[in-house]
Amino acid sequence: MPWNEGMARYQNILVAVDGSAQSLHALQSALRLPDAQITAVSVAPPYEGDLRLVGVNLIKNLLREPCHKALSEAQALAEKAGKAIKTACLVGLPHEEIVKLAESENRDLIVMGVKGQGLLKRILLGSVTRRVIGFTKRDVMVVPPQAGLGWEKLLLATDGSENSQPAGNRALELALAYGAELRVLSIPEAPGGTAKTAGEMLTKLRELREVMLEEIRAQAEALGIKIQCVIGQGPPAKTIVDYARKESVNLIVLGSHGRTGLTRLLMGSVTERVIGLAPCPVLVVKV
Image (cartoon, rainbow, N blue to C red):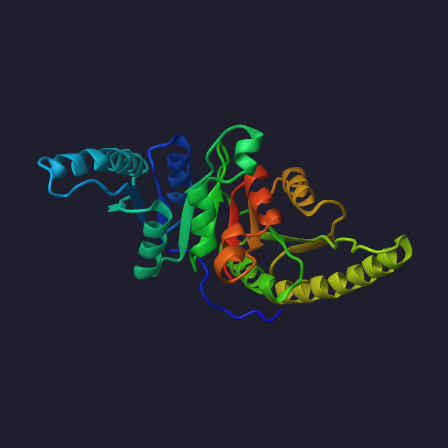
């Protein structure tokens, strides 16, 4: 996994807010990022009625009211933190407008909250978050309720595939930039087949993962990063979340899988479940 020095700290950040406590909590986490230029964006629904009707402008203004209220709350939160932010009220489909703004302004990172307090609600990501992650080319950080953002200990969960390499590179960049300790977790999954062939394949997979982890370890140590590599066992999402909780990890770094269309939209069940269950923010690094 070659590592190339590139972007280190996130500095140009877009935070999606909708007036919910979860979105404001995500903004609060983004405000802790040093030297970051932040824009809070909220999206109002478009007016789809007859444009010839009298009072259309009034209706449009009413549709934008929740957007302006959310941004006013975001501005107040930033002022309380002693930070200056920009705001943007857009009209359209939320995920489309968020993705377009991130692209047009070349944002480093999109930050979003996790809707829902119940376990099932958190596992099943809201459609806006899911679609933003699916369609954007930018990294996305999802912040769960009550979780703070820190940089002391990062967890990179990787399967060693080509699609996971950008996440590995980004984890090294962030660990170096913030002086963080890096944990790397890889979980080989037993293939189908007879018990004998499955066992043989799993042993081979573990050997390949060990080689991959040694490569990452060597890169980290060459950069002066404190690192610990672990091969896990069990259902990937649960194993990642349990490890993060047990080791008091501050941020989980994952790769996104798939480049276009439906595969990007669905993200992959492991990524989605980790985001929904994680005790800390999750950074989804784009391929």
